[in-house]
Length: 339
Image 1 (tube, rainbow, N blue to C red):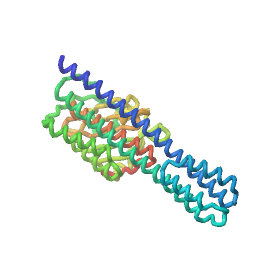
Image 2 (cartoon, rainbow, N blue to C red; image 1 turned 120 degrees about the horizontal axis):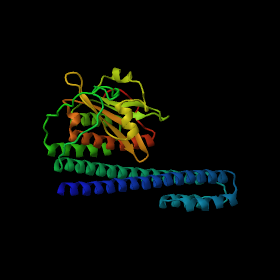
Image 3 (tube, one colour; image 1 turned 135 degrees about the vertical axis):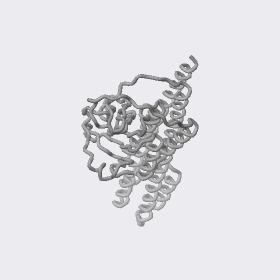
Image 4 (spheres, one colour; image 1 turned 30 degrees about the vertical axis):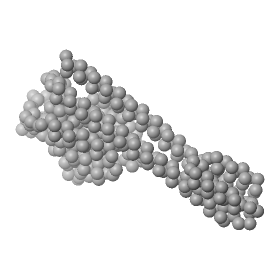
């Protein structure tokens, strides 16, 4: 009963944390969009005022400068506009006026960029904190509530893209691990994924995740712009030449990767004793839906381990946030070379 109550409490707290984080990110993105829009309006107003000054239109210039000053968000920007106004005089020297207006525009632009960068840092901290909490919650459940369950699984194969037309007996995962070090490694990985800044660093972290899952290879499949196919976007453990030859997977295909994408549920591919490794396929879920999957080829029958499955789900959750944010910034990684 205590284990069940603990599971319910941790589940509710985790849902609340993830919901709160999602709402915060949404509000933050709305504010960033508002800041960008205000910056564009200010730029347009500066151009309009500059044209008025250049045309020696006193009435239009006065109205434009008053409007421009009301839109300035920084004291320095307003001060520069006031200096430009003081230099207008009888329009005998317009160069200083135009120079002050340009300085005001640059000041407002830098302020907007600084505000956006600050919000991005806060978003990364929130994602890292929620991811770390999720990792600890899942790890605690795995330790406090061990369970044996029957699973419906796909046919065994070394690739997550094979059809489920064959059946074999599941293998037993015999590798023993200490929970403490694994949880610490998981928390560190989640934190690093939350603040990843470039593709090379992301590839290094994907390699680290594969090692923690006992995966001999891992591929990140992302949905194509048309939404009909999955293509390999990032990999570890496979030759670059092999990954480059991988064809796109139709989302309607009868394989573990396509099923994980369509159902938004983790899929298991059992190992074939003496022939091939098993695999775990986890969906990349965001607030807008599933954007891809990760398929990990697992050594030693570890695909049946609850802790390995949980860790795969954690890694998928973190990668989904990172790749979705990167895609929003139009910097989505598209290289298929192995890490």
